[in-house]
Length: 166
Image 1 (cartoon, helix red, strand yellow):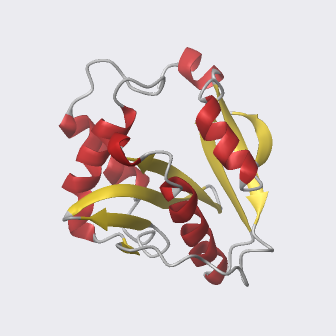
Image 2 (cartoon, rainbow, N blue to C red):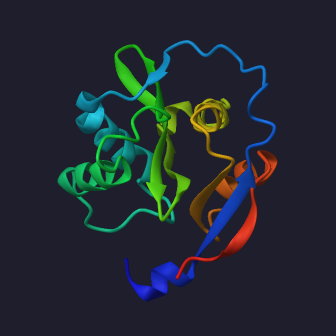
């Protein structure tokens, strides 16, 4: 990512102290990410980001596979990562990774046909509970400042500006 692109991004963070006893809605099709989900996650990424401020012109499905693999780290981070599957396809996900000693929500994505249904909120809440159960007490994510819809969702979930991505 270029330095200009990085300057448009910020970190957001929140404490997980209230994630332990949260009553989570039961979501049909919600399940942990599996190692063989990479291709379906890459397809979801291409669809979710197409036409948005975060879409990189010329990006390919292979690029998306690389991003997904990078977001999942060495595979040890699969446990807190979750997806929602509907009719055999992945429609939303929250991919979790470890970065420099803290838990990070690497990607939160929802298929364009399934937006505005609370799925991103649901996968994030479930992932954060799983992160907290694993012993983490704080979580961060990076977001493009101009992605107003995403920032609103994150703020509603208790995330606050934690400085620029450098």
